[in-house]
Image 1: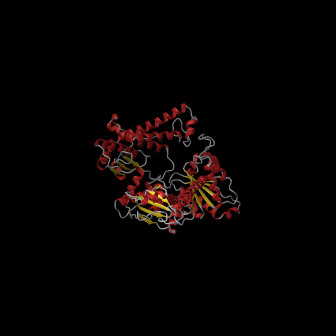
Image 2: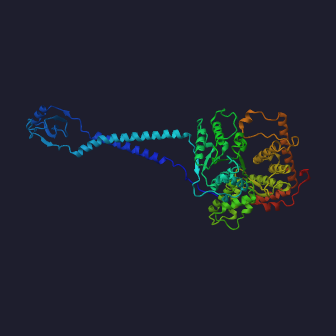
Image 3: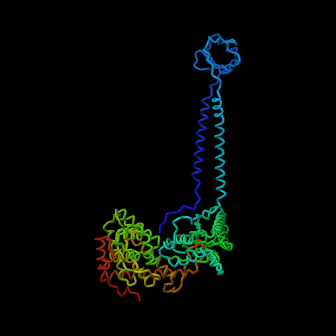
Length: 623
């Protein structure tokens, strides 16, 4: 069941406080700048100072137009000028007349004495800039201190804490994976009732490794364990431990386990643990690189839990083959829970969960959809449900119809239709022969999967698609089934060759040939299905790239030549069988080609009708 992310238990980000500090500092700088400009323009102009005697003589001679008395200072404006340019100092206790000035010769005015308010303003103009500068320095130092604290917290764990959210995931809400849920229910009991197992001398498992293909619900199952046990849940990705600075990852591991012990009983969930838990000694980065030091710290912490600390480590990966053996030994990851792709029953249950809150029509057959979706993961099924809703909304439907579900399934499985792509008539005919060849060979061969649909409409990166779907889930594949898969995969190229001629074959079969070569090599190298190399396996672990570059292969050049010959033999045999089938049923090939040109897409029933009566030539049978 899809759930919205919950932020409870997370530490709030300090971005708003930092932004407010920066805004305040910017405003303070603006105010300081305005005050500086105001003070600069508010200062009086520079006046030329003269003696009181000279001022008196010039005044009495009628050379001044006005005199402003400001305490003991005279601001003098000579005649012919608009503002004061001279100043002189006199005795403030004696009047101008007593000092010899003839006040009738010029206009004399007196400035009032400085009031307390003007004194306060003057003080404010002097003090406010100092205060603003001090406040600005304070916030700058505080910001620098915060960055220093952040640097000191570089080695702290970044795990997210869950467990207080209201909408918890429970096992009952997860469809499928019944065996995995049963294994994990014991872990829940350990967390809920530790004394029950302690009285029997049982030791709580320290680690549980969830292994499975992508999209099978490993993370959701871990959340369900925390929800069922009602304990705190620390979630972190393996890549979050690794940094460019050596020792940071190990420090974060120590901090994470310290927090977990304080919150015990609890769960630590490490997603994609293969990012940090890969096998040591590969030679990548030497023996002291950051990743290996982080792994070493994880090993120490998992094997160093104090007695009575109910902390369980859950880890998820889809590459268990590359993990370090010390991580998988008893005492660390004691249990391994395999989460496989869902079977038909589980697929139907998962689809019902994802379609539960969507308006679907009554004619939607989820059981048939589950049957067709063999090999799909839970994430794929969720995507099909979501695409169905998107298509229904795009078509303005009030409910999700069967056609919407079918289109969504095909869109997810084989790609969207590209009807806008322009194809010439010659390309259409070649594509029709190509896809009809796949369908004919796959229909005639007895151990091939049945044809589900044939189309010459480009989908994804393919010019056309012939879709085979197994009638039921398959656990094993036989040698005969492999050979039939090879033959039908080459059916398109062989049909072009038989009908159009060897010189008219096209590049449309490039992907088919690549897949056929990969399948044939897998049969020889990994499955031991060769003629000369029967029951011999030459598998090379593809998890350690450097090992493949440095170490020699485990077989000789002569054996490599035999492997190449075996692969060539399988491809030649498959091409021969496909050629025999097509040449023996040319009329059926033409009929299906004509239907494809007329309708562009032919469903399974019509394919069966068109190929009715097609025979398997004796030369194409396997003995």
